[in-house]
Length: 355
Image (cartoon, rainbow, N blue to C red; front, top):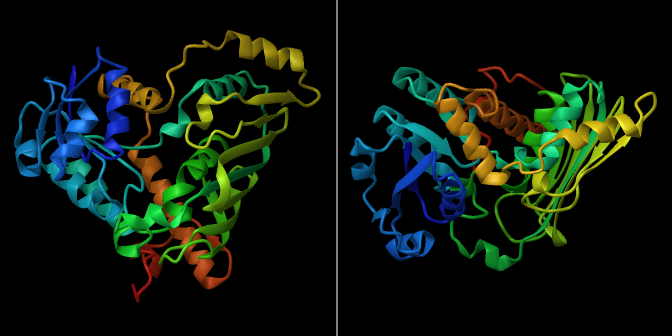
């Protein structure tokens, strides 16, 4: 049984639902939040969960195996490093870090502690992505050609009533970071890492510091081309992924926060036949845990010595490197190649100097 402390009861409340779906693998022992009323609302006054506002006490508790960090982005690395130094494994909400330099600190701390860090990318888990993995493993997908991602969400001014949102200091970035990061992770998960990036960003929807619109073009290491369209000025919240492979086209539905749990279509392209595709899909178990539950099941497997499905620290670094390249390209007005060199100014952070 993995004993957990959740730090932050905002999005942490959704993490708690995931843990409760796996009662034979996880036991949440503490929820730490400066607002104890919010913590109580998140836990439903569960007698097995202690509520506290004392982070030091949580990290000093020898019973806790895993610390789940659900704090504003500027606190992610400092708290994660402290947790690692206290001998805990770490789950951390996105974005994992605010720069590649911070990633170096986090990687060094994990190595010294001999503990694992799992970035949150729960969009990878669900029936649809399990189906696509099965088609790829069956050899029916073939080479990826092109892909597109849409993150078209609606964020009104009241969303930014929480003071740190929409600011470089608190949120560390805008729509390209905090909202589209999951879609970009899915693109890289299925197409491989990005190697060239061209991006344009704009602040057009709300009066905030950070960007709320972006248009991004990617060339992947696999040779595939991808585009990402991002706005917080849509009429509703929709997310879409479409990937054209040599043998088939995979297309998501429009569910904004659970794309892998939505119904996808998989359309064959000759010489692959639809019958072959449908035969593979029929063999995929329908009861695939999705979202946070699927993500956490993979974490539990990794901690039990059965890795392979979990989101890794290397995945987190790739995400932060892509974010760095997006902001670098948008400011330079040109294409950026990855990996980013240590002497590149963007390596130490993408926040504007005048923030």
